[in-house]
Image (cartoon, rainbow, N blue to C red; front, side, top):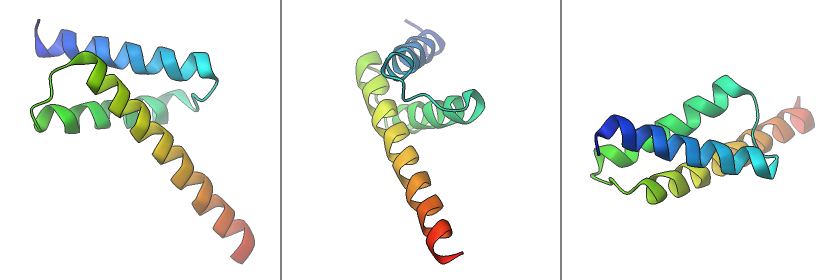
Length: 78
């Protein structure tokens, strides 16, 4: 399987899981976070689709949590 197919499959798995769970946010930002996480793992040598997808989901959830934290801090401290 080519890298392109691996990336597409991992992206689709992650996107579908987040969409089904209702966690998916703005499409452009969500896609960028997922793809960045997949790309980072590819650079480290990971090629397993499910591992790429699961780590991308984790990275997306961490990104959302961090964004909410920053938003809450801004709301509290102006």
